[in-house]
Amino acid sequence: MQYVDCVVIGGGAAGLMCAASAAKRGKSVWVLDHANKVGKKILMSGGGRCNFTNYYIETENFLSTNPHFCISALSRYTQYDFLELVGKYDLAYHEKTLGQLFCDNKAKDILNILLAECDAAGAVIHTQCCINNVTKVNDQKTPARFILQTGLGEITCHSVVVATGGLSIPTMGATGLGYDLAKQFGLRIKPRYASLVPFTFKDTKEIALLSIMQSLAGVSLPVSVSCQQQSFSEGLLFTHKGLSGPAILQISNYWHAGDVVTIDFLPNESLETILQQCQQDNNKSELKNILSRYMPKRFVTVWLDSHPLLLSLSQKAIAQYSKEDIRQLADCFHAWQCVPAGTEGYKTAEVTKGGVDTDDVSSKTFEANHTPGLFFVGEVLDVTGWLGGYNFQWAWASGYCAAQYV
Ligand SMILES: Cc1cc2nc3c(=O)[nH]c(=O)nc-3n(C[C@H](O)[C@H](O)[C@H](O)COP(=O)(O)OP(=O)(O)OC[C@H]3O[C@@H](n4cnc5c(N)ncnc54)[C@H](O)[C@@H]3O)c2cc1C
Image 1 (cartoon, rainbow, N blue to C red):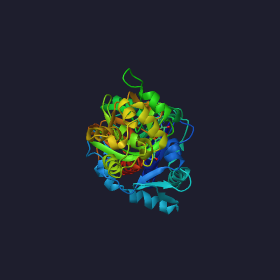
Image 2 (cartoon, protein in one colour):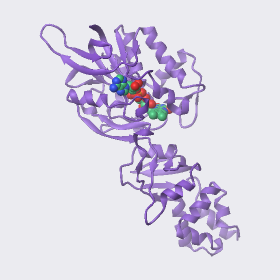
Image 3 (spheres, rainbow, N blue to C red):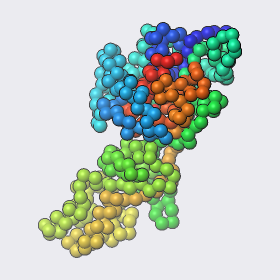
Image 4 (cartoon, rainbow, N blue to C red):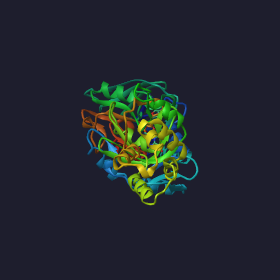
């Protein structure tokens, strides 16, 4: 039997940060991961360049049943603390947009920093190690401890940190072990959803939405998308299954099945003003050509063909448009409404929304309220960030804070 102070289950962003930080405090730490290597999501993140944090981290960028839960950790370990860490290793990085910070080179640079920190502090990482059972022993003679039955045999420890992440991308090693452990120790679980995820559509009798989107697959344009009183102005991408791109992934965090999504395909212009100007100037250009100055031509062509109203207006001279024609046309481009059939699910989702109920965990220590020594960090908790480096910042912050108490 092996004894260590702390076992961290899951060697992802939160687990590695927690292990390195706890080992720095002099704790003996083992990281156990069932995958063949740790940090796989770090490696695939940000298109291979890892959007590792954001200059503008605010509580409003996170969703949780308890929106206050994340405040403490995010203020005790900030984006600037992480920047100080990467600065120690001379990481080359840049701001892409909206405060999002990416590696200049490869996401592997971030993983290497975490591995170097673990190594320097003496945290030991074991991969391909399954965890079969975790029990807590409370007897009178010895301090409370956990016993883990693992692929490495029996391990006894003082504290267990559950850092198993969410359910997205099962092929990268995602499992529900963290939720199972939470349930086993009496913590509640908030409903979980694939999030930061593309929308899917279906053809219906009324409108062949999927077919329209398929014919636009690959086209992208800047939009403003709204749902549930939340809006994002970013890029949209048509796909063979429906809609994707940053704007869609962002709004998916706020979308529930059946919700209407409203899209402004021309967020920085007023179509009404453009068309009224055409009328004043007696501009004889076709509607298609006018619109193609502002939006991708392929989009304009397909969009005008796909709506009976737009089709009839596109065959009419702009000079003859009534006020109502212009208003209806503007609505079709500035406030187009759709109800997605669903999402692409955990296969492609960047995160899991929902998870271990934050009411059952301390926001200061990340310890389960009724099971001293058991900690939950990172995405397994019911805290979900926006797209843009927020989820990694949550992993770093929660992992670091828990490490101060294991
Ligand atoms: C494609 C993609 C791109 C992303 N890009 C970004 C980005 O650029 N910026 C950003 O902020 N966020 C991004 N994210 C989200 C981010 O990766 C996660 O929020 C973050 O990794 C969560 O950290 P974590 O440590 O909680 O979980 P994870 O990083 O998922 O780590 C969990 C670890 O637990 C291990 N594990 C799971 N089950 C078991 C088990 N049963 N036994 C043992 N070990 C287990 C896994 O193998 C894994 O190593 C992206 C996600 C995806 C999928």
